Image (cartoon, rainbow, N blue to C red; front, side):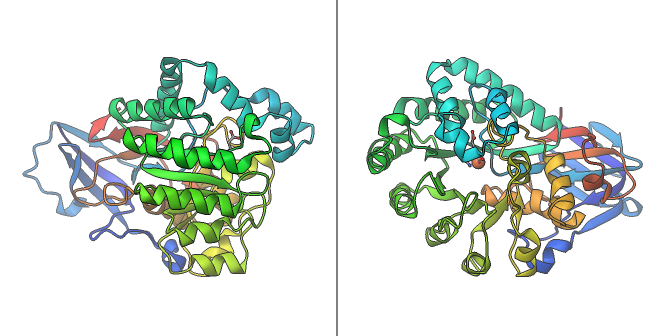
Length: 412
Ligand code: NIG
Ligand code: FE
């Protein structure tokens, strides 16, 4: 199957020689070609260029005219919990009435509420609901997604979640990475025996997850009221022995030390980062750890905002992801995340696009395959409807600008 897209108003995020990620001032740079064409063959990006130099010898199976429209690499959503048993709009009423995320969690709501439902739901139901969510985000422009476990909180249920993610990988066209998040919350049975739960994660869960090859990465919710730096240190150290690179939840609720412990273990990313100051910025600078901000969760929970401008100005890279989950961010719409990046965090359109494509691809370990329009990369792209400028993408929040989605070179 080959496709030629002609008359593209702007072909966005093109790279001749691919980079792993972009940081600091470079985040405001975005390579694009006006009046362009793009050809796709056997699921890959085959060639692209200016219309004035279009190769007339091409004989594609399908020609798409994209006059007035732009072509983007699909979004990479590097942080989600989209395998979950049920929505949680009931406890959301408590939130509206003024209870904080931590207070809801203390009452047995939050992650523990999802964990209870997880024990009851069948693997099939869990799979089907997640498959639908994958379809939903695919049509909104996402081409790759990371999915975490963490609503199991015991060996059997964690394995159930991870097996569902493995099945999704095998059956859904999106590129999927899987993360083991056994240390997401302390289950009630271990209430005053936190370190024993950490032992269970280390001695029983990690070896089994690894034996079944169920996870690409390992995560810990390192924050006030959840797991300590010491717990995190132990878990990441154990994960490392099984080749599991960390991607961790850090500094959402406090200056938890999570960023530093993530960097210490060469985490692929540290995510949330509402509580980030000079010390944390310094610890991230020059490392291979991608600072990842989740605007949906901060917005939904009414939290303070990560100092994105300050971080970029200090020379750091930033990735943006949705955190799609039933408790703190019940949306996986990356177009909306891009808008929030600019509206709430003062990111330029170029910075937001870099943060949701090349940098978020890096944050989930797929930047060699995805995240830019580069010859040889997977043909996961979208064609917009007619839009006046790239700025229109973040500006027109709430409306769907994605018209055609192509995944692995196939129109959806
Ligand atoms: O990323 N912060 C921790 N975990 C999730 C929330 C999960 C939930 O509430 O179900 C998050 O926001
Ligand atoms: Fe999360």
